[in-house]
Length: 106
Image 1 (tube, rainbow, N blue to C red):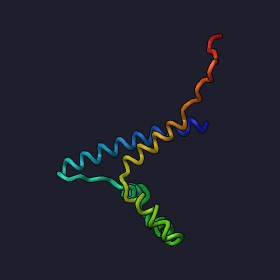
Image 2: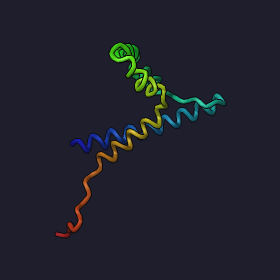
Image 3: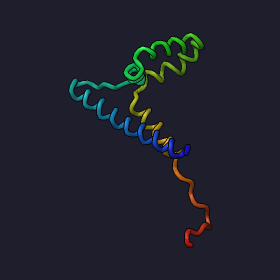
Image 4: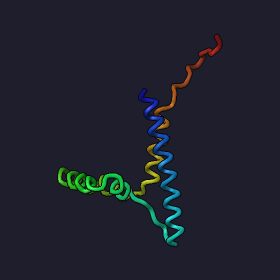
């Protein structure tokens, strides 16, 4: 069951990564500059009001940890992160390989 969920979520994230690449490419062509959608832009689009409260909560708990890990993550491009995470989940969800010397004949 966990493998199935990993594969489904992995496929969704890979598809979202490709959609993000196409979206960023179309925006870049239309504006004649390189435009990249960041993770914070995606979070604001999906969660609207809760994104600011989550950021304030993270900054209030550990400000140095937020500056070292949280801020660079939120400013990074969303499409490559979605692709990488999706590929990792697909790799984790693959079926186990047959052992050496295992026969599949009846």
